[in-house]
Image 1 (tube, each protein chain N blue to C red):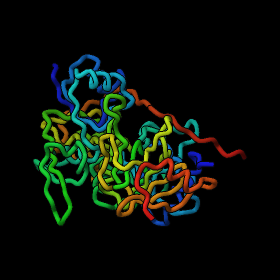
Image 2: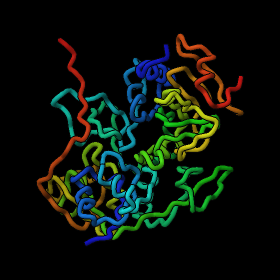
Image 3: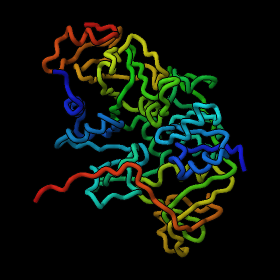
Image 4: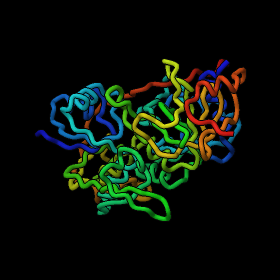
Length: 208
Length: 190
């Protein structure tokens, strides 16, 4: 069985180590926070917060306390607030150890596309271009194929890029792949997924 | 007033905030990083009624900060190799490519703070600070809306987030604070 959303998030949480400052994107990456356990991780929200806490209890929501996805959140003892220029200064400056992001497409050179589909869907890049250009390690969490069954792990991205050569690791519903010279290397298979299945769902070059 | 160019991360939501100026077609051009959650913004952009210059969020914030600091341009790695780099100067520093981005010098800044004293020193609250300080800095004239105007001397000088030198007008108004994505967790059963 391929991993579900929560299993992918749990696998992504294994990438995190004590002491890391980490930025989580919207969607499955947000779920990663549920699986960090006892690890000492500080979450950054690029709208101006380090030390992001969990969702508030009902009735304790504060309109002045939201994450980058505009969701109500809470603060922790370690929390610090700052403006957007300072926030992206720490991102661009390489102070954030890792970003875990979703993707529409990723390719064997580590190129990432996740902000628009020309003529169809225009969302904007938000802070994603800054994050992939600035953080220490970029981990993409995504379904391996789209709803038509076509691979999203490509030889070359067809959509407008968010960043070029920026992805370090891909965690999909089928397994884990690293971007290495010459293509992608299989690190791990989801439980019950065969290497043949993963290769069949991957357009990108897989190297040993 | 029409044909306004607005630098703002997004364009508010439908019918609220900057969304009101979209509805009245007073905006000619937006400089933003995000179009989502605003159907009218996306409609005007896709139909060509509205010009949209996409800016990565951190680049937009830094362009405002730079403008406010008298810096006309800076180099950043953000957007290298993407459509954002098209038409921009690329320069290599220590083997790494960077693109030239321009500081923003605005005629008018409109921002929101939590408290102002009577000299315009501002304090923001939690994540509502976000773009407000750099946006305030880059305008020739800055108008701030606050929840409370307090007597000069009642704010701790060490805790001022934006000095009043950047602030020209203060408006204290009853205003609505919306929550766009209300997310909560359940209390543990006792």
